[in-house]
Image 1: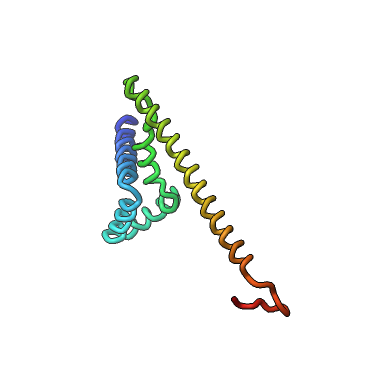
Image 2 (image 1 turned 90 degrees about the vertical axis):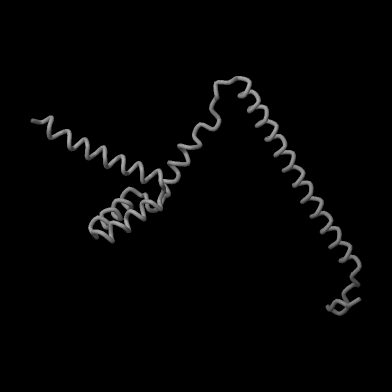
Length: 140
């Protein structure tokens, strides 16, 4: 007799967990749309979904999207099993990192040169200014 009562509970839990996983895969918008539909058709369902979303922190922390994003991009740097491709990928990533650091160094030198040119221009303009007479600067 206990086996017959346990099966519907497992089915219900399976259905609920599958529904939750499906809504998580669709993102926060699906949760909100489902909650609004719950309010439209039968307000206690919408209210229950709202409380569940707040209690599980789905409403505020973006957990749905971050879970899906982590699942899709989780094995970006794993080995593909093909050693030739893996070495090509490692070399390409290393080369791109070197190019990125070289470009950042170039940008820093460019900023430094611009700052130096602006400072030199300021000092030149300042040296051209006439001395202050009676506490007031004279105009050129």
